[in-house]
Image 1 (cartoon, rainbow, N blue to C red):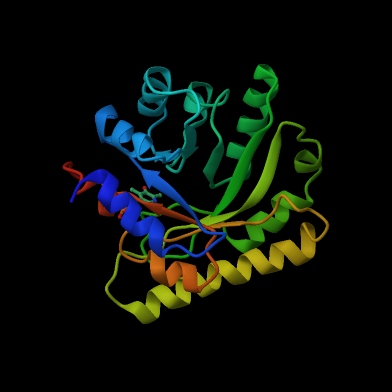
Image 2 (cartoon, rainbow, N blue to C red; image 1 turned 120 degrees about the vertical axis):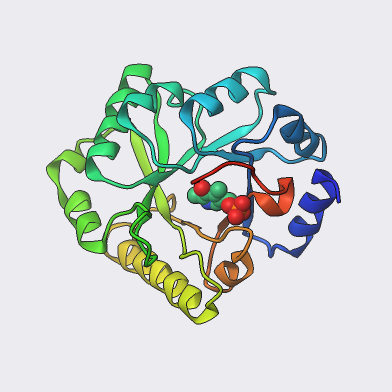
Length: 225
Ligand SMILES: *Cc1c(COP(=O)(O)O)cnc(C)c1O
């Protein structure tokens, strides 16, 4: 099936209120344009320089979502156009994004990434780390970021019970943070969870943004990513 067919098939299954981030990392701009011409605007990338190049080359109304581990020295490649950074995995990264955003005179929407998987290769905070961050004076002074919710990556496993537990855990983290820190804040509303293999389960657990790559664009050919 074509990119457009894959995209429309997935979109037709999403309940209202769940948005699709088409993960186009490593894929050519022609693939993105095929999805764009089918009406899609939200794309996800995980390398800052690759996203910068695609942003420069492609239509300006694309909403670029950054979903990968972000090094502080790469923030400058994305800060002035990124729609949402899903992957804030430490207090120091959030501080660095805030600083770079201030330099550019922008406010950047961010999600806090939580470690919910069993694999140590994955990034993310714990609930305690997030509490420390959200209660800190440094956080309260940050004028150029906005926390819009949470993100997590489930384990790469066929064990549905485990995936269910991990997604339930992230939903619980969201509910806890919402109640304790963002009860009066309408912007804190996103739960970014679910990929090609598990997005239906993620939706059942309350996901508001699914990040789907290979089911739209086909397999990616590279090692160790
Ligand atoms: C690559 C990636 C995805 C998409 O993965 P697929 O299995 O191809 O759908 C989603 N989220 C993150 C953080 C990714 O790095």
